Image (tube, rainbow, N blue to C red; front, top):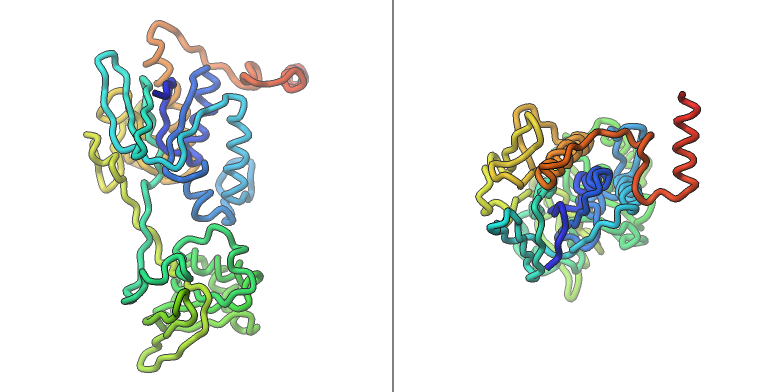
Length: 350
């Protein structure tokens, strides 16, 4: 049985930042995530994509944001159960929650914070008859390591930001890149559309619209595809087909925990602390919903901060927590040099 103060379900940016805010209050955290590494979507789906709305960072790669958060919380030594999904929860007579994973690992805490982002994801797949035959044998729905495609013949299908961004990025890596979209118009950012058109005009990529991939061919792995364009069709040699039609989010087993759900999100009370309809269970980040909700990482950081303050009061009802600025209090785990730097900063301000 793994015991902690706050059990966080989801190790994305919001879950990771909650560890920092809890640490300032001397609360220990343990995180559960179905992915094999911390970082959530930022690490698994788009580590190389830039994020522009993180305060003090005009631009930061999603993967770098995760690395920074891991460094920030390192002094608080959180625990992790990775590669396992939280499937059940029960409440004990002494107001503790026991959460069990699909691997049978049990966790106990007086407070549970669900920070599962948009939940688990299933890719939207094109209607190709033998698609499953080539999954992980040339058909990929998520790009984890761009080096996998170096010097390969790549076909990307889709018309949104991901399809455009990866077309631009992989043009520098792959032997050839072909972008196929069923419409002439794209849904992505205008500058990305212009960049793709520029690459096409320069002969650096092939752009086929309006068209669809209709057949896949190969013996042990994908070797070529058929592309249908209006009444005509062509065959292209292809090492990897990457359909990027988006992901369908699902709450998974959490949806059966007795929480109030609205449109695949967990309803919370945003007037105070983002608590759910079950006292002691909170929902922060993209997984929650309330009037005026914005699904932004920086909003998740704010929600995590208030959640931790409420969790402290729940765990230690007899104690009075006085808010202290980190420029004054520092953080647990600072070495002497860091503490002196904080003191020097305060002195110079004074």
